[in-house]
Structure formats: C-alpha cells, structure tokens
Image (cartoon, rainbow, N blue to C red):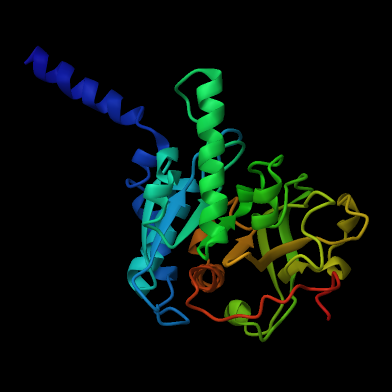
Length: 302
C-alpha cells in the first residue's frame, strides 16, 4: 500500500514539473470552452494543399502565461476550419532543415530571447548549432514558406537582423497595458475582413518597436494605435509617432504575418482577433491572396 501511495505521489510530482509545452494539452476547461465558442466556422480561403504549421513557444526570457491556451487555440482553429494541422513544441531540433521542411509555416507563439539556443554541448558546439538552426529558419522562409508571430515574437532575437527583417519589428517596451483604441488602416484588405471596416478598442499589452524596425516602406500595416483617440499617446517614444499592431510582408519568396496582441489569455478567445489571425496564417501559408505592398505613411495612406 505504501509503495502504491509513493508511486502515485511521484507521478503527480513528475506531472507538475513537466515542461510547459508538455503541460499545454491540459488546459482549464473553462478556457477551452471559451476558445471553442469563439472559433471561426470556416477559413477565408480554401487550402491549396494539406498544410502543416509548426507552433513554437520556447522562451529564453519572460514567459507569458497565455502560451498554453494560445497554442491550443491556434491548433483548434486549424482543426475546425480545415485550414491546416498544427504541431506544438519547444524542442529546437524541429528547426533542423530535414525536420523543418515537413512544415509549411512556423508560428512563433510568444517566444522570447534566443529561443533556438540549445542547452547541451560546449560553448562552441552550442553556438554552432544555434547558427545552424537560425540559418535553417531563414532559408525556410526565403524558399517560399511562411512565418507567423504574435506578441513577444518580436521580443525574440533582437540582435539578429534577418529575423528582425522577417518578423518586421524589434520590441522596445510596452508603454500601454489597458483598453486602447485601434485603427483599421485598410478596411478592404482581406486580412482585415474580420473588422468589417470598423475601428475598435481592445484590452492588452501594447508594444512599441525599435526605431530602426516596423517602418513604412518595409511592410504593409494593417492595424495601429489610433493616436488621436489615446490620451496618453505621449508615453510612447517613437519620434515618428508610429505604433503599428499588425502587419504582413514578403521575405524573398516567403510570406510573413505578425500581430502584437496576445499578452492576455482572453485574446485567444476573442472571435474577431482569431479571424484576423486565421487570415494572417492563411496568407503566410500562401492560400489567401493579399496585397503586401508596403505602407508608405504611418496613417496607412499611400
């Protein structure tokens, strides 16, 4: 009997200390129910082929509590709509070229820091392997595949220029964490269809980006803070007053989509934001045709 009690106790303790990615399947039922109720019924475009998305959420810095439900929501959305199937991991070995080529897009789910850095090996071995995995990701996107990121995907590899170029921005603080007004910059753009041409308010942690990133001329901005309606806009430090929230771009032969929303769990059961994410994912996969002509001014006008 004592052995049985000890065994049960050991299993419970082991389950508690499982890696976050391994715990991600056991989400609170109320959260999963909210996600289920919020999922879109169908995708905006029919997949041109069976699509597979790699959801990656390893962190080497701040770790967001929204990661598990976020990863589950994105996977559930693919399953329900048939737009893609998703595999969630925090194992950087999936960025080895032979493994990565099985996927059509990578989704950086609130990654932080140098998240492809391995734990094992000498300093030289770890550095060499990290560079191999970084090159593999760059080559993957450049070859015609997709890269998607939410929230702290831009608080990832701030010193890697290729990644900053692909993802589009490098985190430089979050002056606002409250309900903010959001301007829909291109009402008729396919990735903004969820908003029905209407500006909106949302409660989340809002990023600003390093001054040499997230620039007009680099990518097409979809959503941005509505500076005229935000009383404390002067908390931001961008001299150009540019605080984009969502964008898309091309990268060589590939496609990229990013949205800075996703700090708070409820973002992943917001039906409108999920539709926006789905459209962005399908653009990155190459299934939803969309204009990626770079925005030329901060207010979204040509």
